[in-house]
Length: 379
Image (cartoon, rainbow, N blue to C red; front, side, top):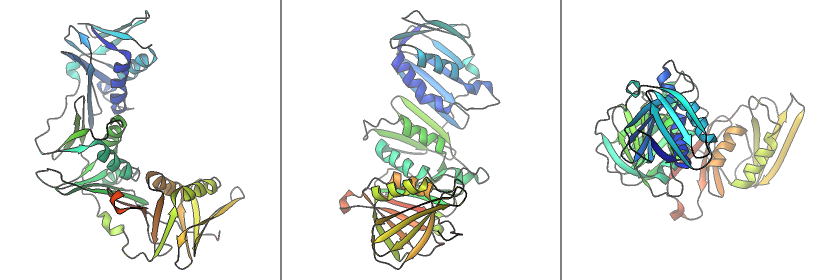
């Protein structure tokens, strides 16, 4: 039952599946990969019972081949092996690894029948989405997912889909990321559910950036969402909702508008933020006609930094404070050379939009929100 596979191919499969392995689990079997050989493909499965990953790659052998083995150990061993052919074999419940340079090892495994199987997914909403669109949706929303596990629904990403558009939204109460694509999606019913960031961020990692038009099949039922390509299937349990009505935190009256060169703002905020308070990361923005003064004062270390940049702003003088780290995170996501800030008062949310030179360049409706910080001392 020995099989052979190139080290590069085996390591690539393990890299895709390994992030699903839980760091801590009361079930020992969840720390394992399941390795199976069927025909001409080696299949590797991983799960934490909320997320399931199955990847496959070309291999040769005389199968059958079926074993579960400690994922961390086999991953580390394969990583250190030289390029070339790797031979895998099984002796009862022991995995044998041999390669051309003379290296060999044994790793005790377990019966694969104890490994959890993939959930049964009903034929719910099935549609296809390009890898570039899915990646864009995830990256423009997932940064704002809450880390507060007491509000479980905010620890996920809201995914809305109907026949005419699809979009993702996430917020932690301090910032919000929202992106919608107007396109035709052949879904049987509109969908509004909360997906796990662990699963979709892993999809971003394994999506082939060299093939942005690759179609990813998506299937959503009441409990699970699956993403599939020819050699990969990921299944993730949906997070129980409902998701809060995020539209209520988006201000509609924002009379103060500023257009700023993204790179100039980005560099200025990074420079002054070096001296910001390590807890609040407070950065003060002072807007005046054609100018923006960015100021940081840190009394704990006796530090002060300020920089003035030119902007397109013709409103009244306006002062507002932001968490510099949160602001930079949003600026980093925007790809266009200019951004627009829409504001009202010192305590109302600030909206951030990309600015497109030509309307036809606009492929999605992007909206980012950041809540201001209270400026206690005059800086």
